[in-house]
Every structure is written in structure tokens, then in C-alpha cells.
Length: 333
Ligand SMILES: Nc1ncnc2c1ncn2[C@@H]1O[C@H](COP(=O)(O)OP(=O)(O)OP(=O)(O)O)[C@@H](O)[C@H]1O
Image 1 (cartoon, protein in one colour):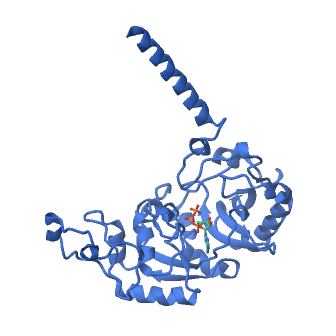
Image 2 (cartoon, helix red, strand yellow):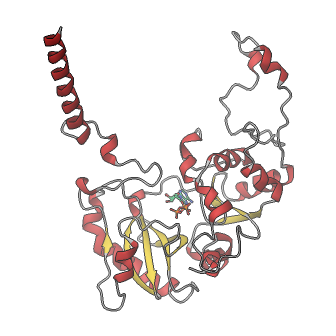
Image 3 (cartoon, protein in one colour):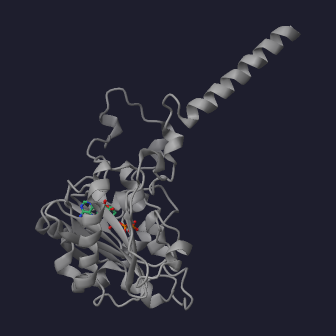
């Protein structure tokens, strides 16, 4: 892979050309002081001081002394006051953009969203209404370390350790996107060689009936809108199919590198020849064939403790072993 191919997948680069096909997005070039704040591991984690009085964690205790039963530990009082970072200009510009996008957004850096950090947000998802919520998600995300440090690691012509500039992309938030309607599409030598379900941890029966229809819609979208417009030969893109059967572009990603092939393997995709082989839309065909999640990478089997599950069987064996041990220790005693 070449650096150019990686660069084309940065949202601030592809967005202007594909604006009409994707989610409305606003961009802010990030000052290096904010990038340093994101990567600084030296002290305690502090949210920026908000000049607009917006708070990422409204329910947390702000002033411990106001708590009825709070006693100041001696060593804690030495730490005050904490020097909180502040980015007043950026915060105000972001507030304006969020307002024009309807009040709620999902944030992204050049390539990635902080998708692994949703658990820390009070909403438990990636929606944000203010700068401090964005800062909280970004500081808590490991996905963003790809953008900050490793974006060019798979490049054969690597000279850059990071992009020249970082951008914050604010995308209008759609609360009712259905995960089963998101698909990843694989393009090799300008041919669409594979499509698959993006959320692979769940079986969606509806997809069994709609597979052919969805494949046709996505293929047509690729032929009409993407194939001759995106400059790379090998890449992936994610789409969402609306209930009106319109295909919306979510994102471009590289071929291989840090992009997950989801229900395929890269070896398998390399062998498909777009012109000869029939295009396949691969879905989870039954409850038994779900795959580990992207966010936690914990296999479903690990979480499933219901009767008859893998865990139930392991626990049964362990219990039997304990019983045997008990019996033999009884015998010894
Ligand atoms: N505007 C939006 N409103 C609501 N949810 C969204 C929106 N945009 C994206 N999402 C959800 O967030 C997820 C991650 O978004 P996105 O693809 O932009 O992140 P990413 O970091 O580039 O992910 P990947 O690296 O897997 O492509 C999407 O799969 C989708 O479920």
C-alpha cells in the first residue's frame, strides 16, 4: 500500500467530492496543542476547562466538599488547584458547528471514530452535544491511536509518521441507524469483489430475504457513484441502506492495512476476480455463525452462559472435577 492510498481515505480529503452521497459533516483543523493534549500521558486525565460551561459528565461530583459526608483527605488537598487545559477558540467554533448540524454529532479524526470508547459516555454511544464530550471520547479511545501514530505503518513508501494536519470531523448524528443495514464493500482493481454485513456479531433474519435486493442496490451505487470517482484502485467503503432503499456512503478505508475484512479474509478477497466471479453479499446466515465483535473482540460464546452453551458445558466439567476432588479428599480424611 502507498501513502497516497492511505491519504485518500481521510474524511477531509474524500468528503468534498462525495458530499451529496454521505452524511453532512463539518471540519475543524485541530491545533497541535489539542493533539498534544490527546497524546499526553504524563499526568492525571483532566477534561478541558469549558469556556461555554458545557460538561461531558453532568452527573459526576464537581466539588467533593459539597457532599454531606465528604472528608478532605489530607494528601488530596495538596493537589489543588489542578491546572485544566482549555481550548476556547476551538470549543466555540465546535459549538457553532454542532448547532448547524442539529445539536448532536458523531466525532471522527482523519480516519477513525472513537468507537471503542462509547462505554465511557453517559449516552453509551458516540453521540456528542459539546466539545468536552468529544474530548472525553477522544482521550479514552484506543482506535484513535491508529490515526495519531500508526496510519502509515503498512505503507511500502512510508516516510510520514503522522499526517501533516489533524482534522476533527463532526458528522450529523442519526439516532435510528439500523446496524443490519450497514455493509462493507471491497474493491480490487476497480471492481467490486465482495460485500458483507458490517455488524457481524448478530444474526439478522431480515437480511436472508433482502440479500439479493441489497446486493443489487449496492452494486448499482458503486457503478454509478464510486467506481470512477474514487482515485484508488484497491480500497473498501462502508454504506448504509435507508428504508427508502437509498444507499448512503459512510466511509472509505484502505484495502488491507488496518481495515478489517470482517466476514472475509484478505487472502480470499485477493483471489476473487471481479469480472469473472459472481459478486457475493455475505451475511450471518444463522445464530450459530455470528463472529466476535469489533469493539471488544470478545466472542459471543464467551458471553453466552445460557443452558447448553459452551460455558455451561465447561462449568459442568469443572463442577464434576470439584465433586471428584471432594470425594477423594473425603476418602483421604
Ligand atoms: N452519523 C451517524 N449517526 C449515527 N451513527 C453513526 C453515524 N456515523 C457512523 N455511525 C455509527 O458509528 C460506526 C462507526 O462509524 P465510522 O465508520 O465512521 O467509524 P470508523 O472508525 O471509520 O469505523 P471503521 O474503522 O470500522 O470503518 C458506524 O458503523 C455506525 O454504526
